Length: 171
Image (cartoon, rainbow, N blue to C red):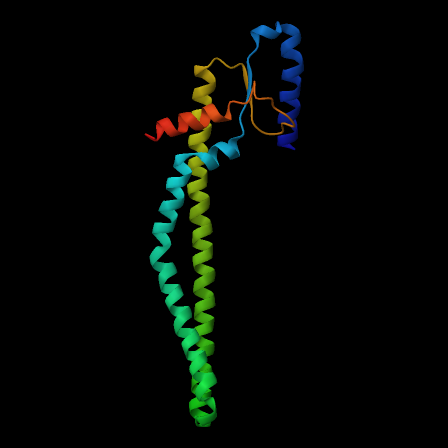
């Protein structure tokens, strides 16, 4: 509902502003915030940071999976010559390791998703902050980002925003 109200206000501003001011007096721009965030060096750095943060846990999980596969192979290969007690013990060990593996995989996935969302939020805040600075520096009267059906190249300032983000990152 709030998004709908904001879209109505933007539409009214676009209709009313030109009628109260001459068209040459109003400077309108459009920014694709998702494209800008995705193309920003800040997001690239955030993704690398995420990979680095979870590299050890991912490597450990891969090792657990390998060990589990080796146990399963051993069971397949040797179960015919094992005693009933040994077969049961190995089946239980495989089942326990499988449960632990699945739980650890879920935990890592949840932690990665949570951390990715944190980093994405940080990146989006930087993008919005930079978009505001760009809009003020270039004297835009109105900059729209969401709910746009079409924006010509004349009003699309997304690439300028991406360049500003790169400059802010030192690249």
